[in-house]
Length: 501
Image (cartoon, rainbow, N blue to C red; front, side):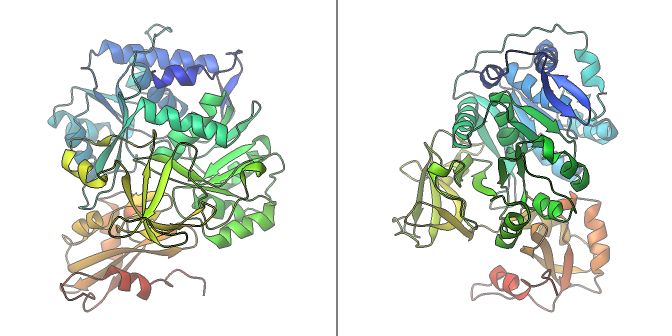
């Protein structure tokens, strides 16, 4: 079944009621249906080959959400890209995914279109967060009706690029069935109510904001209070109008800094995408009376585990991500692949209808990441208690999650090592009270490096969330007997770098 058709079935009977309130600009359910139909009709007019990717590098807007729905309706494959990405990063995604069309913000059209056309992309359109752009101009004359293209559960719906062990981003292929099964599971497990209102302040270029938050509200026919970007003050002022809020840990830290937090109408606070410090979890409970629900998921798997929502399902335990969701298989194994006992630390492996089919054009890498009996190796390390609750200990790979965004050290090191004054670099993540983890670079000198100058140079080359918050110069990097840099030691040495004095 086409995912859009399933989401559309959740729309309320009154299509003229408000679906999205974007800072006072109201969109009805009919607007979403008509708008996505017009965009889907325009995409159909382009006569793109079956399975074509549509790469989207735009700022958050309701129209961007409509574009996502339109791509689903048209039976094409959605490729969301962080709007903070620079040319060097975007080049890889466009070269690897070979999209049939690219949509970007108007301010970036010059360099994005040049890059896209050089790599054989025929169509490049603009879409801005103020309801303007050539994409909307083209779609304006299209019919308001559109029959979703028939798709099966195994047909590809989206590709999400995620970090890889070599530093090269990998495209996780998610099907209509993957996305729909997870959305339906969360609808039931999180007990979505007919009158729920979601305050949506997350980006929509990754799983959390697009596939968890948006799908949840659309499938349930719930109104959304929509913020194009998160600002603690405005979000706090509208919390009394909402019943559900989803955020990364950074958002909760920022909200706790607000003088007034009226949460009396909220029934559910959800946190994910990065570890939530137990101190934040406890402070939120003291301040608001609410226990934040932590859950665990990945680009490759969507949501895997969740603390309970309903009291009859159990209690929420801070510092854990709860038991496996219904229909999801979860196991902890040792280095030999043998099952671990309760509370024994090991490698987290999962399976289920939510788990992706593999990485785009990387069959060998895909095979490496699955066990012989079909379980996906998450790369995370954790332990499961006797009651089934999972506690994540760390990651077997060096992936850093800062403010909910994935950062792979090898990529940053590649840029750093090209800069003057840098002999060698090692990028690590260390605890940070706001971002969960902060990116830190430890370098050996080649000449006289200027740490602030290096940070400034990186800001011109890569997305801001990847730029190290601190560059530390050291005479040499710690190594083991095989000559490999011991990042664990570096993390231990600098663990208190951002701790409160």
